[in-house]
Length: 489
Image 1 (tube, rainbow, N blue to C red):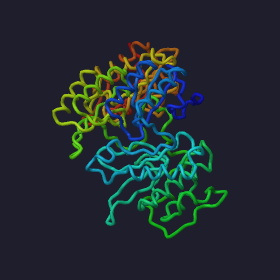
Image 2: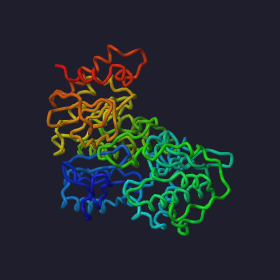
Image 3: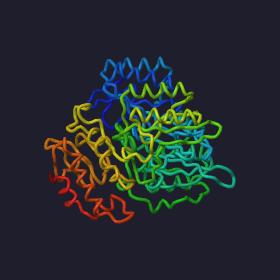
Image 4: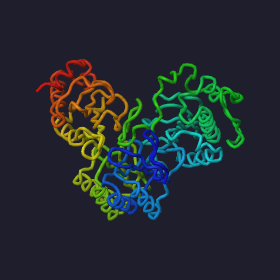
């Protein structure tokens, strides 16, 4: 077992991360999914070796919490005994319905595998930081629009067949588009981007590339195999330009590195929504034609007791589910169900407390484990979140995410939100339009935080214009007024 990974790194099975409630490991099955029996086995291992809490993150990773150094080793042995092959190296991610969705432009998995192989052949894994990642998006109903990555490849239809739009540093909305090319060139340009990043050091990301480097990439339509690519950096020479293809978006007008979004894995321990693209909830029923029905079920706030996951997986097994895939936005997709089995599993999931409706207000709340699960937590985050969802769910529309953080680290949502409740020495503080790290403008007792949000929700109901998003109404009310509403008895 390696030394514990530092915060901000990726807590893989071989390198657990120290958190407030013990060690945490993150598992990403190479196949993208698990059999129901495998998920049952993982749940039983979590009960034996952890604190019985399992999570699915915003990027669709499975996490097991509350481990010790000894129990983490035992967990690794049991994962191997279950025959679960877990991903290592640079994450090259595809959508949760990859290869199954009849609406996708193409199956992205073959290209993703070619990129993984090329990364290994180029010897890049040890040269890149743990937060560098690649997205290969085949499109369809559950694409990867909201997920940030250093390299993004998105399938597009063209007269000659499928081509790939190559972009860097962001999600679909704010990444810098470079060029649209065929599959071979897409693979090679993706690896070239990673080599450029590696040349800048293990703390670097694609946002750090120079205008000259991006212009070279955008003008490059045919490259040698990765094993013979030159080392590329501003000091050692750029890629030679070949016959240019018109980039989809001009590189010259891109944002500076400081304005671009950060790479994805920091703060994922409890899951978060990233970037500015429009998200598509994976919760609900998806008809996959020949592959049957997929049922998306969410974990409230990304977390659930292992025993409830075991119970759900056992029910899915009896109903004939073939596979359980980890999905973006803290959800599981149960694949291969009949219409009758789908209804039965959905009812069972609702009875167990899972999220079965994409409109459930719990999907709009980011909440870390908090107290007492995490030693760093100063407030009981999940209880506060549940109360707000039940009593003031109408406040939680699609215009913003409410963040409930047990401490100032803000693991569940490192980015700014319209409202953040954060635990501290003075109780539950409120940050308006900021992060958990900001100084709260007002406080109230931690046990009473939900009532403070209730006062804000009541004011929004009174002041809201027809059709006005809640975030816009809050902005009109102003930070001082919102803070006073939260503080008042």
